[in-house]
Length: 99
Image (cartoon, rainbow, N blue to C red; front, side, top):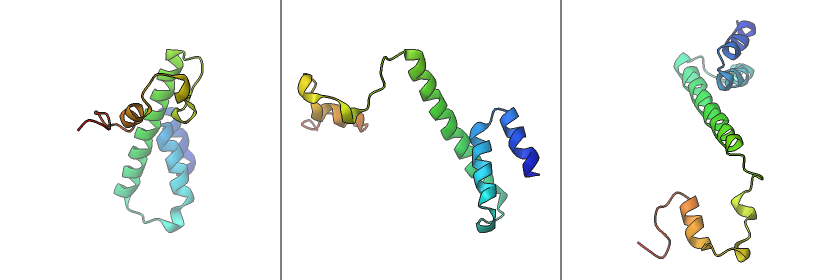
C-alpha cells in the first residue's frame, strides 16, 4: 500500500503530505493506528508545505538582490529605530514606548 501511496500523493502535487506520510510510515511501530490522527498530521504538513512554497515563490518573484535576516541588519548604519522595528517584526502593532 505504501509503495503506491507516496507516488500518488506526489502525482496529485501533495508534496507536504507525501513527505509527512513517509515519516509517519517510518514511525509506524510507535504510532497508534488512528486514521483521524494520521489525516490531521498529513493535512497540517500539506498546509505548512504550501505556506513555505508560497513564501519562497513570492521572494523569488520579488527579485530581491540578497535574502537578509533581521539578525544581520546593521542598525548603526540606518536611521531606523531598532526597538520599534523589532516590535513590529514580532507582530505587535505599536512601538514599545506607546501603549
